[in-house]
Structure formats: structure tokens, C-alpha cells
Length: 490
Ligand code: AMP
Image (tube, rainbow, N blue to C red; front, top):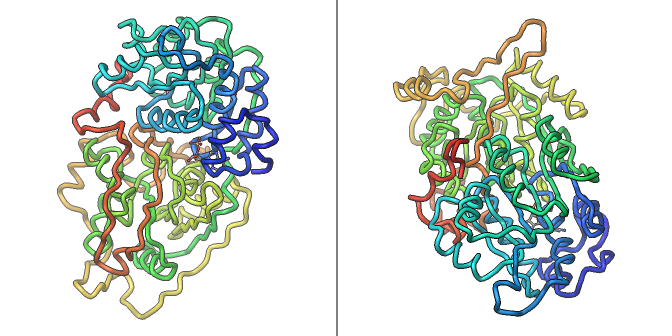
């Protein structure tokens, strides 16, 4: 973050909204993108959630639309002029909320439409007329077909999280939607990656875009304190608990390499008195929503997760991330620890290497992040028996646990994540496991719970009330709409 918003000469209503948000300086994506969008050029932006990219496109679009601002009650005076497309309802809702805040002192109207909930209230809002429409593609097409949304006066289109939209299979929907729009328009595309598919999409729909790249994917934030400990598998849980205790960490993510390991570790930690939930792709939608909401509300202290969960989780500042297993892909290390130390907050990333193959995986990480990694020994506080946990309540067997029948069933029924903890081996090529597929579920923003209560490893009592998710996202019954297949994604 370098320069101030005052350098932008934003119109007073927008400058006031920015000031009310408490923003002082622009984030790098804002610094680079806002002048380009104000100048009316197309943008191809490589930026992830959490970089401030919503303001980077919303503020200049609102500024440019101010010339159309009016207080008429006639819907005809409020045609859709800016369309923002996102892959999931959580992201759409999150972006729409931000747009509303930035536009709050203007007469520009905004609305959000996404699937899984009744179309009627959305229809009523659309019929009244809105200048900025935030939408997921499937539901937008429903509204287009029902003639609730007319897009022939759209001047600006934002394809946000474009790579995820393609991952989910939205390309045909996107192509259809774009076919309804005037050719003469400004198009902004934001994506975490510039895969060949994204480049093709950009080639078809963007005109001489300015490429803007902010957070290079392989960089780790300088605000994250990174430690690598050499510790045997048997001592990892003990080391984890000790670090939590010593550092007074209230909440953390604990990453493991397999869903089986995820379920086992969560169960073990829970039995040891830590308030823990497992989060992996095999959990039912309801379980996953509950787990994430409980973590956000501060009702859960440790979230044990696989890499499926790591991707796309919009988390601002979880205090610490533990790599209980060193990830098979060095890139996943960067994704995992990107959950902490966000937006300038300080974070802690602790990784446990247990020798053998881990040494090579750590070397891969070292190469990727271009930082020297020292493997540190763990010095245990007291002479608790190694490989056993003594929490004052009961003793556990050594951690060569055989697992139980439920673990085995989980493994057989659910093919999406790897079920063993061994790295895949290729022939002579670097040993890399394929990255876990992205999961549209994990799009919900995380905010640090405001609580003072001690975590479970310090005190049993928890008093924090649940804050829940946005008021736009209500009933549980509506959740499955998020998870529809590519054929009917929204
Ligand atoms: P985004 O990447 O757009 O989802 O933004 C991530 C978070 O950063 C949001 O909570 C924004 O409110 C916040 N944010 C955006 N721009 C700034 C800024 N210039 N200064 C401080 N916070 C910001």
C-alpha cells in the first residue's frame, strides 16, 4: 500500500464513502487498476480475494457512472449499466455489500442476484431499476430469460474470479450472457491465474486490455512469521498444543494432506479437549457450512482442513496456520499460509517436518518461496511422555492409530481427495500430487471473531455468540444450489 485515495480526485460522495470505510491508502491493485478503469480501458487483472480488488473496480466504475446518476423513481431511468459476474453466491453477496457501501452517498442503485433463493424479491428489485447488478451466471440467465434483467445498456462488465467461474463450468453461461451485451463496453477480468483458458476468454472478450498483476502467486507475505520444526509424527500433536499454548493463539487452521488424516486428527484433538472441527470435501454441505460458521463465530478453535479447504477460502487474518503435514505441492504451502498475515496483519505459519520425504518437500518449498528454511528442533516444555498425550483427563494410545471403521468407509466412498498420506511418485519427474480441485463452497469470507474468551486449550468455557453469515443468505434448505453440477451450476 502506497498512495492515498486523495490523489485520485474521486467525486465527493465516493471519497466520503471511502473515508467512512476507514481506508487511508490504496492497495497495490487499487493503485494500478483505478486509473486504468477511470481512463476507460479494459483490464486483465491477476489478483486474489483479499487484495482490495472489489474497490479497485467498483470505485472507478461508480465514478464513471455518476454522470447517469438521478433520483427519478422511473425504472427506465435506472438501466443496468455495470454487470459484475462472480462464481458463487457468497462472493456475489460479499461484493454486492461492498458496492452498496461505496455507492451509499450516490443515487446509483445496486442489486445482487444469485441462485438457491426465491427469484421473486430479486425480480422486484430488478424491475425497479438498478445501475449495478452483481450476479452469478446461472441465476442471471434465469432473470434474462424471464425478462427481469435487460442488459442492452450495459457499459461495464466485470468477470470476477474468472478462473473459478471456468472451473465450475460457467463458460457457456458466460458466453451467453456476454452475447446479450453491447459490443461497445469496458470489460474487466480478474483471475487468480492466467491459464490458457483464461487467456482465451480474455482474447475473445477484452479489447487491448491493460494487464495488471499484483500478488505473484508464489510469494509469501512478509507479515507471516514462518517456522519449520523437525518433529516425529508421534510428537506433532504435542508440539501443536505446546505452540498454541506458548503463543496464546486463540484460533488456527491445521492443514493435513489427506481427508483420512483430517478426520483422524480432528477427532484426536477433540478428544484431547481442543475445540476442533474437520473441514474437507467429503463433509456434507450442511456440516461444512456449520463448521465454517462455527469457526467464524469463534465457537471452534481449530479447523483441521485439507487443501480442498485451503483453496478459495477468503480469510482475512486467522492468527496462525499449522502445516501438520508438509504439503506435497509447494504451491499449496503458499496457499495454506496465505490464510494468515493478510491485509498487513501479522501471522504465524508453523510446519512440521518428520524427516524422510518431508525433507525433499521442504526443499521444494524453499525453492519456490526463495527463502532459506531452517529446520528447528521442538523443545518440549515438560517431561510429558513422548507420543502420548497427557491432558489430565485420559491417555491416548500412540499415534500409529489404526483408524476406525468410519475412516475406512469415508475413504472408500469419497474419491475426490487423496486418502493416503504418501506423495505420488512419477518417473524421474518431480514428485507432485495433483492439486486438490477447487470447491465452490469455500468462498465465504472469514472475519476474526471478536472475543476475549480463552481458547479451549486455556479454558473450557466459551461465551461468544454466533454471528452467522450474511443476512442475504438465509435458509439451510437453499444451500444445495451452491453445489450443483456444471450443467446447472447456479
Ligand atoms: P477484496 O479483495 O475486495 O475482497 O477486499 C478485501 C478487504 O479489504 C475488504 O474487507 C475491504 O473492505 C478491504 N479493503 C479494500 N481496500 C482497502 C484499502 N485501501 N485499505 C484497507 N482495507 C481495504
